[in-house]
Length: 384
Length: 116
Image (tube, rainbow over all chains, first blue to last red):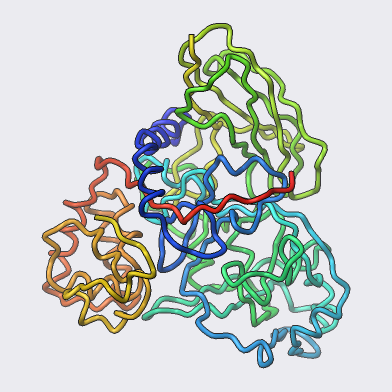
């Protein structure tokens, strides 16, 4: 199980060194144009985490949006020669240019994108992979043609059950290519896009230029970057990143236990989750009047409520949800609290979604550390 | 010592990296993150495809490191059969489950204006 206590211990373990970290960041920060103040989980392949303190906006600036790459980014790309092909179980295969995609009806979807492994660092026992803490998540306005419109133009045959995406990731060695598929029902959802824009500008290279898929409410891995091939299949794609990758055990397993892939299912929609953006964990606040704020999201569901506890979970008070609201996007929330006296406090946040799911105190361990959505918490010091 | 500056990549001298095809690639200096003594051939076997940062942030037991090593060999890491166990021992010893968490660096920060 990954409990709230372990979650906090993991954060505190790293935040305990917050000043050395910040100091080193100032002295030895990594020059990466277009990405500001991000936690570098890996350079090659590039994996950048958003510091949780940046989760205080409805729209995450591209500069602060997390980056998850499984492979090398494309080293060269000639847009004049780039094509998006649509083939497989279709009547009329297509190969479209960027200009042709831009001429199609454009749809904008505000989507909270979260890596399935966000929070993996808190798994006990530890699991291999990028050791994301809280910030492999962000919200952006993605714009581009609906995938449905492309599939309609190509004419999906009755045999078409899944839609596969292949990108231009450069594969090292014998690593399996990063290719995944989604069910046809999700592919023809009117909000599933071939995105060309992010926050009103053309996609940047780190986020999939010239085109990426955006599968709203689903784990980030579904939203293939640098997409160049769309293929309709008669079944789920069976490559490494569909199986054994990105799968959840059908039943809870013992921590550390190996799981037979036959007893798993693909990870799809994100789970209800909240983050406390401020005050920061380990902060020593200046005043007893404290503005607690953060974000909460729930994949394909809506956020129904967010509650805050300032007494380590004994009692809970409702937080105020912001007016900015869009399906698939996180809600900002806030709660004003006056600490009764100086001292050390543990602040918790927990969200409940429109399907009645509430963030749990603990979640079952799984071998890849996917979909960890335990109640968030920070510890602060209030001056006497 | 932690060095990540892209600008320094060409000027820093890393004799041990001279054999890398990827010497000119950025971040080859991430090999500095590996605590010594590093087994011979470990850097060439592992850092050809990815940097050392992804290694040093892991906290795994021997069984998990063995699984990872075998996956990497399957995925193209060139590891002599005689080196496999040496590499696993190095990883298990240097990055065990009870080691303190790795503190990752950050990208340079530039103050920006935001839309709320």
